[in-house]
Image (cartoon, rainbow, N blue to C red; front, top):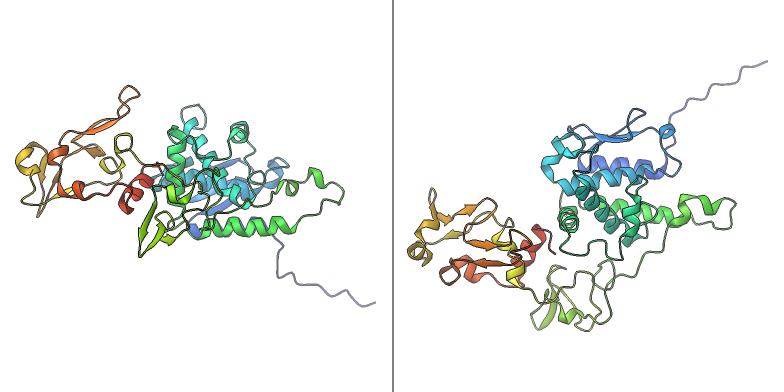
Length: 346
């Protein structure tokens, strides 16, 4: 009787989403490991460790857990990569606003692909996630919203882009392809909560805002070359009659913003003949080869207000003699948009 030939195993099956999101994390700069000793943690050396399959709940999805940790990294910023667990305190309520910001960002990234429920968190914070309205990044002045908007601003820049958005789009394709509602047990499958992607704005944004808002009324609409264009879309042409997208903003008020005078920009240089030198010499700081306005921490030393709920507005104490870069700054211009994005207001 002849012996059965031994088959050499040269390949290993992997869940498509596991492979996709592990590779996405690697492209962004993180390594993903599995261990029964943790639920989810980071070591401060770019390794994200997720619990092994046998230790997780039936509705835990590795893709969701990796996305959640990446959202934490986006919220906390580049310095957090070198801190275990992104520098967050998971044992007390100290960082609950940071967790809420992470969940807001997670929803804002997943929903445009119909994955808001499929990639929803499975921890005790799910209750907060489920209360988020149609716009997960509203109201704009909530602390967790500001942090989430900053995370969203980072998400469209390297090393996150294009990898994060590509992974979400690929996940949506895989999820849509699994549709089989007539199969036994479908209703209890996580795949059954994949939603059709919501309608997109003609410029590609995630959703249309209220119908009574139009692109032509948005502060980020401007004219160039005889056509109306959108600053948020990098200057692409728009039809003023289009229903506005969720980036819509009414006319801005510098007194409730002051992004350009805060941490958005770290220095305002001044020329040799700038009137502020004579009017306010106490605010002029001379450096090697140039001069600039003094800073008070992360903000311009001439900025007043905005320090508490009792003083919600901002004013400039040297407005009449403000430096030329400030006089040239355009309300609603490209630098204005960038400043607001940098501080999480737009």
